[in-house]
Image 1: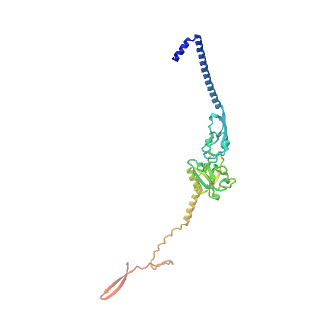
Image 2 (image 1 turned 90 degrees about the horizontal axis):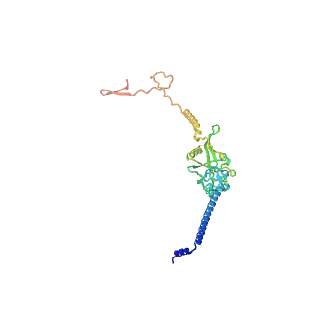
Image 3 (image 1 turned 30 degrees about the vertical axis):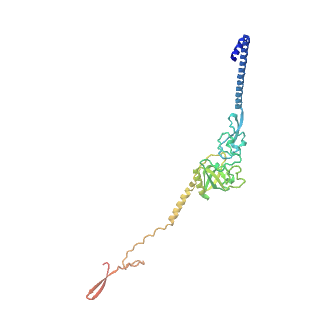
Length: 320
């Protein structure tokens, strides 16, 4: 028999009161189930909102950079600052303490005010190499120094100096800065700042600086023409100073030397000999004691004269 027909036959034989009561109970149960489902969904929604608000209001400590940190440079304590910010603003790998970055090498350049993250740091125990010290477009130039010219060995990688040139000696000595705020990237063979201070290791014999190509040429000229001295700057002082080209220190000296050389050359040149005067005289004329010999007589012409078999020879002067 058809189940649906059986159901309707049974329902038609059921008393109306029982049927109505069953319908009411079924509706109540359905309404209760729907209400419970809505309440569960509301509770879940409220819990999610509360969790999000809790996360937004939660704060965490991160590390900020106070100044620009160049790529491949060693991070110093004075370049970092710890601050609390909302947890939602913190990068996933942000450092929670400055001590985790001090002494580490910056893998990339870190801008001022940037949150320092673990991916900004080179792995421990791995050196980025000397090439990484050079910024794009810059050139490395090495020149010799000694204890006096290198500030008694207090310069180190990442130090900033002014380079001064000295020419002449005594009262003619001239000194002027030729380059301002130059960064030292290596002292001798050491290009890492950690342990690079030469206070305990004696004076360096060379330093390497990074410069633009134009300034690199300027420095090479100065190395060839003068004695160079380093003037150490504070780490926080980057104010430029007026500089000159080393050739300008020789301008006056060269002019004086040229003038002196020209005068000496003129003094060494003897005046050309004056032509001897031509003295006209006649044979037998008094020459006032001058030992002047008479000019030779012009040659004579011989003329033969024949008279029969007799020949006579007569001599005649060239001019009559």
